Length: 122
Image 1 (tube, rainbow, N blue to C red):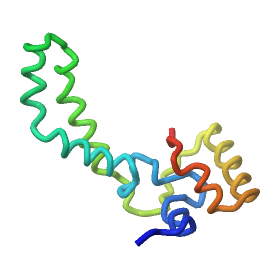
Image 2: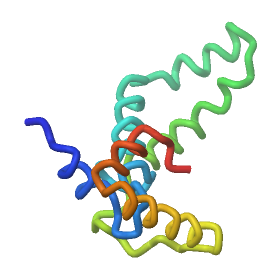
Image 3: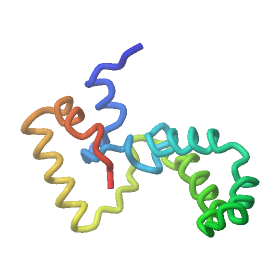
């Protein structure tokens, strides 16, 4: 079933106008979903990462356990409730929030979603 732009906008835009679907904490968002897919694709790569340190001589592979832990953290997601009230707006984010809401008022929620859906959140 293909969701309409309106349905996607309602599902992924918070009342504040931020695209929650791009937030690392949004359980069904891009970061948790893609991180989980990458973790699954890597499978048992840790064994090979240790070998590559010796075979290739590149110490970057020593960092793989930290990367795997970070990837696991992102894959979990954190915001079960949506929209959440964990914005923690500072002055910069508050100005962004006002700007976003002005843009949505100008062009409409669906058009705004289309405008931002492929942009990174951060």
